[in-house]
Amino acid sequence: MKGITPVIAIILLLLITISMVGFAFVWFQRVATTATTATDVQLQSQLNKQGQTISIEGAYCSAGGCATKEIYMRNSGTVAIPIGAVAIFVNGSSAGSGCPATSVTAGATFTCTATIAPCSGSTTVKATSPGNVDQITC
Image 1: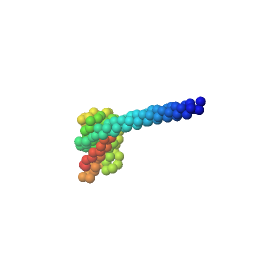
Image 2: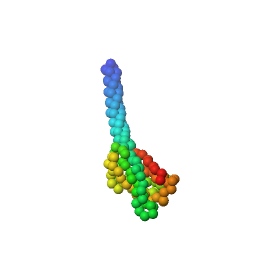
Image 3: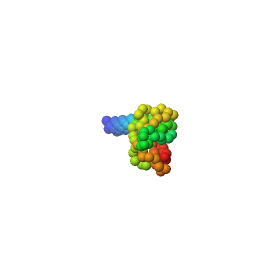
Image 4: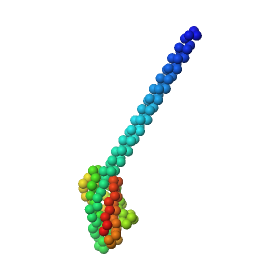
């Protein structure tokens, strides 16, 4: 009987070790899968934002006194720009948001309205989108 006890102890220790290694393997595999999935989602989100770029084509008077300007822009990216993703700034102050009013496909043009004091040679109109910033001086 004394010779069997060490054999049983070794078998039990091996079974405990194997079960712990199996548990650790499954746990690390789930952690790696979760991390990979989260990274993939964030990467796709960032690539989508980088594809939403704009370029300002010009700014023109749309109402009397030229206080209101139509700012003509183009979606120069590869992804549609969603509603309200563009903000307008004049000399660093917010002059309009919620632009465009509809989703804009890649390559399409759209307009945004902003309140701008009469342009002098140093008035800077800046538009921001998820993917870039563009500005003109009027």
